[in-house]
Length: 322
Image: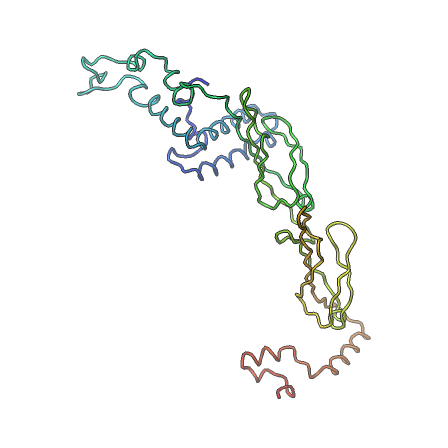
């Protein structure tokens, strides 16, 4: 690209930010534009594709502190006073040099080529190696199961169609960097990197806490009272059996080891929370049995300990306060 092109292009305007915008604001604006203009969303629209390339080019310069400083310096000279055209001298006379003559940028810098002058700011005035390709960014949505096991995705990017492997255990809102999957560099230089913003769809049964998976399993009243061996689902494979001890309360947690996110060094667990299920309707026989049970356990007050701790002894059922 010619040096003149560099200082005449307003990269800040292309990115929709002010000239004094900080790195965070530039990155935020770029990510939004890259998402809106991405070829995956605008297939076949050449104008949108050119805008996407322009945004990528602008971000490639202003996101790099050194290149941004060089660009700002070039714009100051190129679009500003001495090198942008004739200056106004004292009393409004054109020129700004003795005699009021107009002095061109070439004359001021000894007849040199502007490309040589500005090229020095961008590395053109000194030997430099081939430039690395630009980084690319895209967003994907994957299933909960794919996030646990990893998945290979076909992606259509401005640099071409590629296959990208997301590792096992990737999390919602995680940003994955794939080295060398961005735009091709100049001959002899490496390609840029690809950054993938990952969204994970929720699962109807399982949740996630770090490398552990979570699940809520309903149990019957008599299972909670007497204890039981119950079957619980896992994300993959047949259900596993866990032991519920007698007297289990709602919210109690149990662990099925190794049934979480699989890692080479150590896999996560499945954390099972139990919830005592209450039937919505009772048959006459069940109602009779419940009445007999209530009569047999009349002295049991589940709120007794709560009332004692808060000093509300009047709330304890008659006959239970010693």
